Structure formats: structure tokens, C-alpha cells
Length: 340
Ligand code: HEM
Image (cartoon, rainbow, N blue to C red):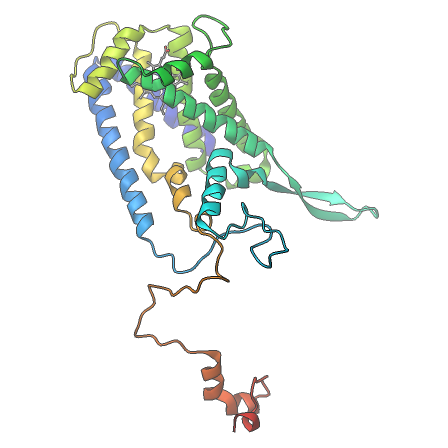
């Protein structure tokens, strides 16, 4: 039901843009007003969210670690999983962001049987999620960088080179982009995982299906524009340059699929800061990842401690309650006799 509801919402967005920019001829609204407003909501929403996270107190060092922490010289430290310095933590973060290293260790619970055929719960490696996620994210990233050719005149050489190498397969006319296959393949498999794995399906919400369908809608409408409708890219570039140069004029002959594509992108921009997609910015602020594990080397004072609340050590606590604790038979560090 949640998946169908999300799909219907995306289809409704497609209908709104088709009718609005096609039959109702509200092209200026769909080309400039809606994307412009969506972009402002995205930037302001993104920045506010990051500021609110950056201001949240992190009173303790709470890195999630794996492997050996720094200790005696002759015991090798696992520097990337259990970093103790800033540079080591930087490498850990870079590996996390660029290669999704923690997802590579993803496990799933399965029921196995021992020699006596008794069922036992086991955790086995599940690398598929990592693979689907990598395909999708890198596909998405390359598509976005390549799109910059629509916003710039002349097109910078690195973007032109990326465009050339991405279409190096030279299949079909216009040539298929490898990143289109990556993004569509990754999205399809991420969706299929939610449909086929009963445990994942059980915990999936509209907030999980909707972004997948929405991004799939964006990618499919883009693919439709390029390979099926074979839209006039020069007139579209005029529209896009108008967005960037504040010259709002829609030339005749722009295919309606462009407005559908742009409307879905605008929806994504508005939805982004309020959704789980904010992990894109949040990962950098995650205290379980961005802190070195140096609690045995450095003493931390919680800067948010209320000075009015005085610390109460166990020693002082025992001094206060030694007699009743002794009478109740509780273990003590110092008996009343020792303390006397
Ligand atoms: C989340 C952002 C976006 C995603 C994921 C996306 C995705 C795609 C994909 C997968 C294609 C197929 C061909 C290709 O890969 O180039 C495409 C084509 C296209 N997109 Fe986007 N797009 C996005 C944003 C935009 C924006 C903001 C614009 C313009 C303002 C735009 C304009 C176009 C155009 C004109 C094409 C056809 C390109 C051609 O014929 O070569 N897209 N898009």
C-alpha cells in the first residue's frame, strides 16, 4: 500500500506538470517560478538543518569503533576503524563518504542449522545493499555533474571530458550514458530489495518509497527526453540559461517532457531538507564518525555541564550512606571500621 501510494503521488506530479505546462500553457510558471522557489526552499532548508545539527550539544566522545584502539606500541592499531588522531579520522570519514565502508560490513540475520539439525541464528555478510547503493549514488553524482553543461556557457573542459567518457560505449544515437545505466540499475535494485525482502518491507515507510519513485521518475523522464523524444537541447539550454541569468523567456517548441522533468526535480528540492535524504549533509556531522577515539589520552570536560550541579563521586556517596549500606549488607569499599 505504501509503495502504491508513493507511486501514485509521483504519477500525480507527472500529470500536474503535463497538464499545467502542456494544455494550460503555464510554461513560465513551470520553467521559472516553481524551480526558482524550490531552489530557495532547498538552500534555506538545507542550511537551517545543518546549523541546527551543528549547534546540538555533543557532550561526550561517542565514536562507533571497530578493531583495536591505540594502546601499547607493540599492539597494532586499526587506524581507519578506530582512529585516535584528526588525520586518521579524516581518512575514516573520506572512506565512509567515498566508498560507503561501513555499509560494506552490512550483515543480515538468517536461520541456519547445526550438525544436530537444531536451528541457530546467524549473521551473514550482505554486500548487495552496498553494491546497489554505490551504483545509484555514483550514477546520480555523475549525472548531476554532467548536467552542469546545461548551466554553463562555454562548457568547462572537465565537464565536457566527463560527458565524453560517460558516453564512450557509443551504443545508440544519441550515445547511451554509462551513468544512466548505473542510476536506473541502482534505483531498480534498491526498490526490488524493499519489495522482495520481507523484513525490509515490514519496516519500509512512504518516506522510503517516495524518494526512490521520485528519483526514478526524474531519471526516466530524462532518459525519455534524450533517447525517445530527442528534445531540442539548444532551446532547453536557452530556458536553463534564462534561469541562471534571470532572463525569463520560454522559447517555442520546448517538449512537455522537459517541464515534467523539471517539476519532479523541483519536488525533490522541496522535499530534500525535510527527508532522510539529508544524510547527504548529516554524515559529516555524525559524532559517531567524525570524532577520534582518544578518550584514554585526553580528559574531556563536558562544556554543557551546569555549574550549579556539583559532581558527587562514589567515594563521597559511600561516605554519606556507609552506615545504612553496611546494615543492609551491601558491598563497601571501606567498612565503617576502615573509615573510622
Ligand atoms: C536531481 C536532479 C536531476 C537528475 C537526477 C536528472 C536526471 C537526468 C537523467 C538520468 C537524464 C538522462 C540523460 C542524461 O543522463 O543526461 C536527464 C536528462 C536531462 N535533464 Fe536532467 N536530471 C536532474 C536535473 C535536471 C535539471 C535541474 C535540468 C534543467 C534545468 C535537467 C535537464 C535535463 C535535460 C535537458 C535532459 C536531456 C539531456 C539530453 O538530451 O542530453 N535535469 N536528466
